[in-house]
Length: 390
Ligand SMILES: Cc1cc2nc3c(=O)[nH]c(=O)nc-3n(C[C@H](O)[C@H](O)[C@H](O)COP(=O)(O)O)c2cc1C
Ligand SMILES: C=C(O[C@@H]1CC(C(=O)O)=C[C@@H](OP(=O)(O)O)[C@H]1O)C(=O)O
Image (cartoon, rainbow, N blue to C red; front, side, top):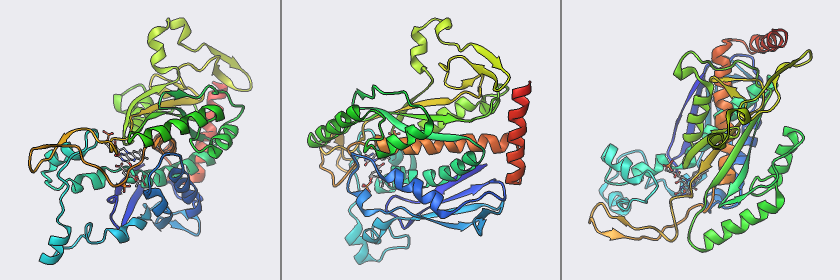
C-alpha cells in the first residue's frame, strides 16, 4: 500500500492518492473529516487555523460507502487560497500582474527548509520552497492516515496520539485504564495532555513563548493496542517495522528524534532491566511481563502495545527572529514575520498518530496480502489464533 501527496500551502487544494487498499472496506468522508478537525485543534496555533475548515472530498475509489480496490483519491481545499490566487496562480503572469506579485522571498528562516531548498532547486524566490515544505501538507497525510486507522480499527487495532511534554513541562500522569479513556481525556485537553495540571502549565508556557516572540517544542507519544505479533520482519533492513515507524515520525515537519518504549533510558540500564520476560497462558498465548521495549523486537511487533515517542523542535518562524542573510543583498537581517504558530505539538500528536497508523496498516496489507477486506480480516484472525496456539 502506498500514497503520494500534492499541493502547496496556499495553493488551491491538497491531494492524495492511496494505492493498494483492499476492496470492500467501509469508508465515509465523515471518518476522515473527524481526523482533520482533530488536527486543526490544539493550543498555540496561529491565525491560519481560523481561516481553514478542513473537510475532505473523496474523488475516487469509493462507491456507496465501500472501497472498490481502485486508487482512493482524497482532496482538501485550502480556504486561504482565495487570498493567494495571484501570488500562487499556476498560469503565466502578464507584465502588470508580474509587478504586483513579484515580491520575492529572499530572506531564509533559520531552521526552516528555505535556504537548503533554494540551493537544491535553484529557486531565488523562496516562496517556491516554503509553500511545499510547510506542514500544511500534514493535512492530507492525516487524511490518508485516517483511512489506515479505519482499516486498523476494523481489525481490532486502535491507535492514539497524545502530548507528554511541552517546553520542558512533562505530564506526570501516564497511567490510564483503557486506550479509550486516554483518547477521551486527551481529546478534551487543549494541549492533548492526560495530566490536566501539567496541561495548564504547558498552556502558560506557550503563552509566555508567544509573548516573547518565541516558540517551543515538545514530545508526543503514540500508543497502539491490538497489533498481532510478527508484523514486520528481521530478514531485511527495509522490512523492519521499527525502522518504518521511526522514519514516519521523523518525516513529520520539525520532528528530530524518536524512541520506543523506555527508549534512550535503555542506554543507562542493565539488560535485566530493559528486556521483557516472556510468559504464556492459555487465554492469551505468549505475552511479555513488562513492555519496556514498546511492543517491538527484532523489527517485528510482539503483540504487546506499541509505544512510540517523537520529539518536535520549536517552530522555526519566530516573531523575534534570529539573524540570517538576504540572498539578494548578502546582507544580514532580522526580519519581522506576518503569522506563525508558536507551538504545534498538540496538532503534531494527531499527525504522529496518523503516520504511525499508516505504516502499521501498510505493513499489514503488504504482509497479509489481500484484494478483499473480508479476506484480510479472516487472515488476521487466523494469524491471532495461530499465535495463541503456537
Ligand atoms: C502541525 C505543524 C505546524 C507547523 N507550523 C509551523 C509554523 O507555523 N511556522 C513554522 O515556521 N514552522 C511550522 N512547523 C514546522 C516546519 O514545517 C518545519 O520546521 C519545516 O518544515 C522544516 O523542517 P524540519 O524542521 O523538519 O527541518 C509546523 C510543523 C507542524 C508539524
Ligand atoms: C497551514 C498549516 O500550518 C502551517 C504550517 C507552517 C509551516 O511552515 O510548516 C506555517 C504556517 O502557515 P501560514 O504561514 O500559512 O500560517 C502554518 O499555519 C496547517 O497545519 O494546516
